Image 1 (cartoon, rainbow, N blue to C red):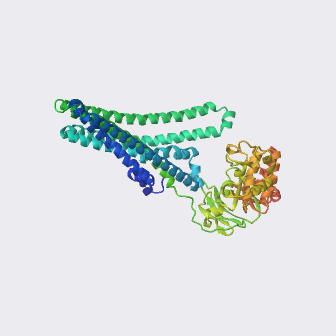
Image 2 (spheres, one colour):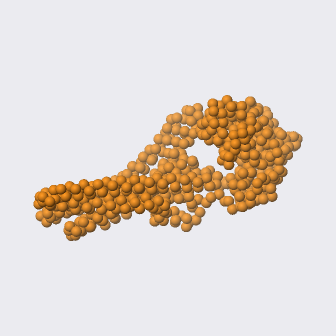
Image 3 (cartoon, rainbow, N blue to C red):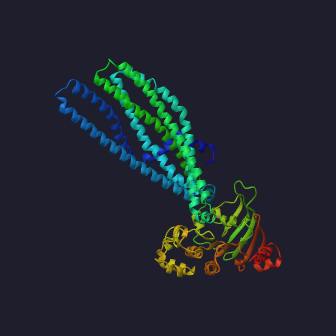
Length: 584
């Protein structure tokens, strides 16, 4: 993801800084983390103690057959293994507590951050990619500071303990094994960049899987009616196959790392056996070779942990890119309990990123409080952009949008948006009860009677009463259990309950049948009463009663007037109206 400046890029891509930032999350739960570290240390050094005890058992129990050790050695072995078991439990369980809390904390932070980002961010990023960051990426990066980190600590401490014991037995022989260590380091230095680069590609592939699946599942009616099952299967199969190839490439690099480490360790083991024959006692030989064999596993684990580390760091960069995104600009501090609804655009110009021309060009007009204004024009003329500027979903590059004499940029953002109610053609409902869909968000404290009154005003109470559980009936994903007209009336009820002074309508009746449109239009008429209303209209028959109509084309208002006045002018609006009338 693009960064705003070079310094931000350096912060996000520096592995040490990334790891330090990740570690801070784990350290919030320092007691559990410290317990896990302590238990891991006990578990690691018990390996060395086990080898020393095996040497003692071999030399004193089997070779010397000491009668005094018959009872002592088994008890010592039992005690050591019990200690190992306890250390293993506390190491694993304490670490799991830290890991799950880190995941919970980061998911909450990322979700909260997403709620604070501007609409333009969601326009540029698919839902699937964003969901994959909160699921796949956070799960991967949490391993870096918890499971992988403690595993590496355990293995490093094990290596230290074993090497120390090997030096105690024979320092010259230990140097034979140490001689291959630089070769291991050189090999790992070459493969680490490949692992990290591949990890980024794996994350992108997972995001693509989520996006593709989400689109196909959400569009099931379209998929079925257009016979696109085979196409969607092929599309999904391609992204899944790419993910498989990338995961296998990671496994291949990691597997080769393990293979090379094991071959180098085998060379060292052969040299040790060659030297040790005839030089060691049976117990010393068993202890030394046992230490060397036990040393191979943690060295391999440390090598394999490099894969988790690089994957986790790539995931961390992806997640921190979101957390470091600037929030919506909310520098304004002006608040109003309830605005009157006077609106004014002063020379407003908007151009979207990558666009070749302005979406709005030097737009100036005024709307009085309580006035009903309709915006008409062909698609792409700037109607939706104009409406999106009012609650500051988008920002203008030039000019000012004024509400009650105050630039909307000077309003507190939450307070500004509380002054608007929105009803659109694309109704947004949640997989929840009818009550919770009407009394949504800031309306959660509304009483049941207030919700009923809003439902009655929206002509929705009649069908709500017929539902199995009335207001407490579940409506399914995006309101799938309701008809189009019923969904629209719930959205109107929500707007009525909000009782905002400025109403924004985006063709709220265009997709309805005649009977549903009649119910919805009656509800809208009640909703628009005594409110400043801006209506985006495609069907011109729905705006005949507007106080004024703004005819838009190429980001400009080319005609203004009432329905009758515009028809009398025989201009652009008149041609649009008569064309629709003929088509109907």
